[in-house]
Amino acid sequence: MSKFETTKGRICGAAVIVTLAVYAAGCLPSAAADLVQEEVVVTNSAAYDWTGFYAGVHAGAGLLNHNTVEYDSIIYDYGAFGSTSMGGLAGLTAGANMQFGAGVIGVEADLSWTSMSTSTTFDDGDMSNSAEWSWLGTIRGRAGLAVDSALIYATAGAAFVDTSFFYGYEDDFASFDGVQVGLTAGVGAEYAIHENLTVKAEYLYIGLPTVSTSDESGAPIDFSSSAHLVRVGLNFAFQNF
Image (cartoon, rainbow, N blue to C red; front, side, top):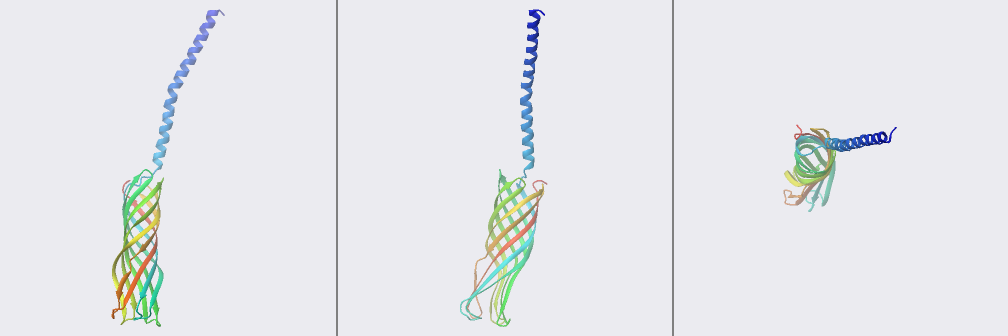
C-alpha cells in the first residue's frame, strides 16, 4: 500500500468520527430536554389543586360540659354544679380555598343539628340542673399546608349555638333560652380521594360566654357551657367539575 493511500484512509476515518460526534452532540440536548419535560409533567400531574369552592356534609360527636353557679343558696345551695355528657351531631358545610404554592388559606361555614345535652338531679329528684345545645354553626378561617393530595390545617373563628339552661324546682327556678355567640378553634386533615371529592376529619373546641340570670326572687345564677367536637366529612369540590 502506498503512502498516499494510507494517508487517504486516515483522513476518511477521521471524517467519519467527526461526523458521528457532531450528530451525537446535536441529539443529546434534545434528549435531555425531553427527559426534563417528561419529569415536570409527572410532578405537576401528581399535585392536587385546593383552590376553589366546595360544599359537603359532616357528622360526629361532641362532649358537652355544663356548669351552674348559685351564689345565695336561695334555690338549693351555694356553689357550682356541673355535668358532662356525650351527644351526636350532623350537618352541612360550605367554604372556599386559595392555594399559594404549598400554603392554603380559606374560609368555611357549617351548620349542625345536635343531640348534646346534660342533666343532673338533686333533692330526691325534685330539683334539676340541665343544659342543651339544639343546633350550632361556625364561621372559621382555615390555614394549612398541602402535601400532594393531603391538606393539614388549623382553624379558628366564631360559633353560634342555640342553648337552653334550667336550674331549680318546678315553682322556683332560673333558666335561659337563646342563641349565644362564642369562639371556636381546632385542627384537621383533609384528603382528596378524587378530583372532585375530599374526605376530612377535624377537632373543634367551642367555648361560650357565661350567662348571668336570676331566679324569681332575684338571686343571681350563672350558666356556662363548652364542648369538644370530633367530626368527619365528605366535600364536593367545584373547581374541577
